[in-house]
Length: 297
Length: 334
Image (cartoon, rainbow over all chains, first blue to last red; front, side, top):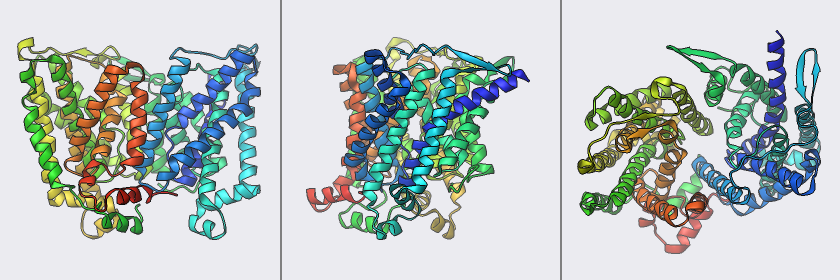
């Protein structure tokens, strides 16, 4: 029972990060119909921005959140304006490969700048944790979850209440009607992509608090972001949050599985990608619209 | 879905059609004939380089069948390549060291796996199909890495022919590549090929015409798996050692796609031309810019996608020169 509760809490804590990862991914996918394979690279850049500020200026990781957001926002804006915009309506292979190529470029530039060494951001509270009802919770992950919830809430308010937010949602519902109503869609695309990159930067900062940093650290999050979007339902902020938490919990339990094959036992912790695929296929077959959603499969 | 106006623009400047330029196909056959002479150079490095080119070409043809002709963008072809490679390794542990047996078993197992997994995955479309296939590739890697029977992450060794007869691997790969080229040529001209293209252009309309999309999609997927599996079997035999990071390397997954794109997807000549150029470029980058060659490769991908989105083979048929080319680049601008 105690173990189950610990797994559940671990899952929720990991799910908060996944929600922020998927939030930006879901925006670009839902509004521009582009699967952004560079999202993992943006996450990595956000983490290294935090690392660099921490090492050079001893800036607390939580204080570097706005900085990595702004830097990645700018980078995303430029990439959309000068590269992705050219193929915004091309067949999916084109945007897949373009964002993959960008990802290779960014990751390998990072390899040159920061080398392939594993790095970490170790603050005074890194190892600290508290115990409630027999369940251990690291402070860093606890605050990460709170920040993730706050960001999701702000994004939800901004998308539903602000003028730009409404223009973004209008573009995703019916691009033709949005244009007729005076929405400048290329501008919206640029904002959406920039915002998504900014959110990836924020996710990277949050991840740097609890995980090791390498230039390829963003890759495992890509397929998870996709599964989270499908699981929660594409195109809504609540979907990313619910999907992120649900997937975090599923993964926390699935990695505990001990699978006997012949004389050998295979631990679920080595099968993270297989778990993601199985969850994806089950959701697509059983409930293709996701838990919250209105997606099309 | 491509918009009607886009299709009209592309037709007007000569970028429509099904098989691509016949001139380009003739060039491919001539190049293949010339490649037969490579082992006479008696240079191990050159022979290995060209064997890799033939391997990537075969895989590019495999991807082209499902991604190019049928329009289902797969990111999981490396699973079939790896499965084919492990077929060679398993046969070697059973003391069966025969390249024909390796390739035959690899084709059968890869195709069977494709059909089985295709029953689920081919129900999906677009992004969902692409990511699910990416997941298939990663999941197979996970599972093989964890199976002690296949050597786990440490891998397996494969007994090889002696040094003097090493060119047999080159010729085997050449034959496999020729098989992929000819299969693509004949399929593209047959009812099967037209059914694939019909599914790519409009699946519902194809179904109305009496094409069973599910059956034909599984056929395309199985054919593509056969090609990747055969390439994997010969690769493993020539390599002598196999482990998950080699059998399922990201390079073997993404190179063939970029090659097919550079040459021209949905054409008979494109994958070969793309493979020769890109494998050549990659070899030069690895030789002279060891530390940054992946960086360059990323830049190559970005440039190809932006500047040659229809591939080189279509340029043969382009009408209207540089202006038409520039115009073709902006049809998908937001």
